[in-house]
Amino acid sequence: MVMDKLEVAVVQAHLFWENPEANRKAFSEKFDSISSETDIIVLPEMFTTGFTMNPKNIDEREGEKTLAWMKFEASKREVVIVGSVVFKEGAHFYNRLFFVQPNGKVHRYDKKHTFTLAGEHKVYKAGEKKLIVDYKGFKICPLICYDLRFPVWARNTEDYDVLIYVANWPKPRVEAWDTLLKARAIENMSYSIGVNRIGLDGLGHEYSGHSSAYDALGKQLAFSEREEILYVSLSKEHLKTNRDKLKFLQDRDDFNLL
Image (cartoon, rainbow, N blue to C red; front, side, top):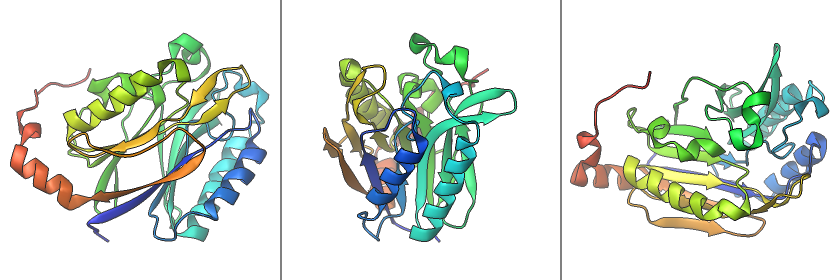
């Protein structure tokens, strides 16, 4: 079904450190208050554990358990659920994002830019492929946290409509988060939505939220520094009108990633 509007709920929340069961329970309770008009629910990066560099502390079965939970909740509430988790596959751990549709269809994206400052590259295998999902007529590109710093990876060569960033972005560098989310919207003439967590993690790092959304011209549509659910209404007409009028994407440079 092609729609002119897409309703997105962004869940900014505290996370229980390395405790998937407690986080799943908490998010299920939050889902009960989300508007029935919602098409997509977006959760933070590693939403069942926090940004842990010790995936061996997590039972290897938890990734599959969380995926099953996402499928159940998506079907029950007739909504897409998006978020990343610690996931073990074969000999490797991944920071893996799932885009789970109400009909059970699952799309996945493995974080391309692992956060070397925290040693993520030593623990999690990096992804190699960008994901574009066509849902209800909107082309959606979901990415993860540190990916935000690399505009070439997000470059809109696919004519997508929405960028979604799930993150655990710490308070000391939150100004960069704010600036780059807005920049990604403007340069790609797309919606840019970022969901961050709040509170302290198990290592004492503080997160101040700043989950937000911007339209294709860089206008801020939503923002929060506290635990809450933000709602954003996306419009195909907004994208079409501005892309037809301004045509900036037609002037983009032609090059390929190796």
